Amino acid sequence: MSELAAAVERYLAELRRTNASPHTLRNYGGDLVQVVEYFSPRGAEPPAPGELTVLHLREWLGDLYARGLDAVSVRRKLAAVRSLFRFLAREGSIVTNVARLIRTPKMPKRVPAVPTAEQANTLVDGVAQSATDDRFERPHPARDLLLFELLYGCGVRVSELVGLDLTDIDPLERWIRVRGKGRKERQVPFGSKAALALEGYLAVRSAKAGEQALFISRRGTRLSDRSARWIVKFYARTIVGDSSLHPHSLRHAYATHLLSDGADLRAIQELLGHARLATTEKYTQVSLTDLMAVYDRSHPRAHEGARGAARGGDRK
Image 1 (tube, one colour):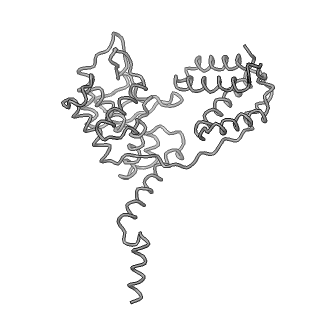
Image 2 (image 1 turned 180 degrees about the vertical axis):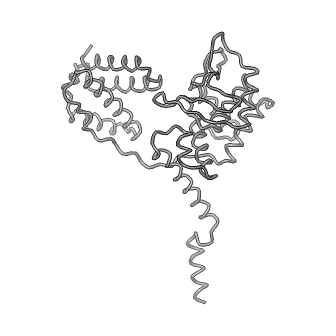
Image 3 (image 1 turned 120 degrees about the vertical axis):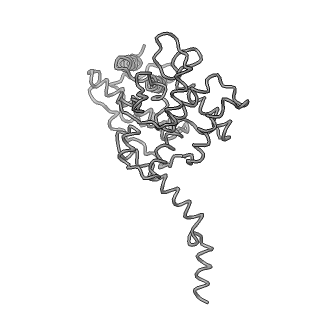
């Protein structure tokens, strides 16, 4: 095994030791294996970590762009390399952390696609009615309904949702304890419809002995995030005919609809578990986009034709 590959193995072992999430382990592991492969052309021995230079890393970034990767993927791969080099610097394997000298690619400013309140409610209400609809024949309709009620009613990430345990639910006070990124915990309230869905699900929840997960798979074990994503896509495709909807679409909808109805941005930040207010502020851009669309559709001065007609009338 090369020095670079061994360094990657030590770093991943450290991530496992510090209880990094399976998502982080999977992505960083895959990204760093690709880095080792890039610096090992035709099976050649790659440079040792201390021999890698800024020029090496810039050439690697250039190759990522040449292969058509978007800024999001490039930023994630660069984050994995930076994290590796920080670890190596801490353990004394390298003298200089050259990864710190690489500029982070800028992200394009994109407004997230957000279902309207009508679309979101149509979807969740459709899930509620699915138990009596022959199109579905789902084995756990009560579980699926609670899944949607918490995704849209609490704005949790799908990883946070499937990570919920029975002890994280307070049905009397209507709070859930959510473990977010970096193992940070927060409390999020849920409403009466989610409370009814929770009561209905707990009455039929069937789990293996000792299993504490709230959401259970058909095998009686914790539901995986992949399965939760599939469930959302299935209902979205069947009910509203849109397979592009995913769990994060409902998180976006939760935040945007709260903001549109007057919720304070700081409160939304706390509910979403964002470390920085700037992350939450993207939802103000969504609201402004919606307002501009309403203006363009409705106001007589919004269109050039209307403005021209008005000017013509003024001259008469």
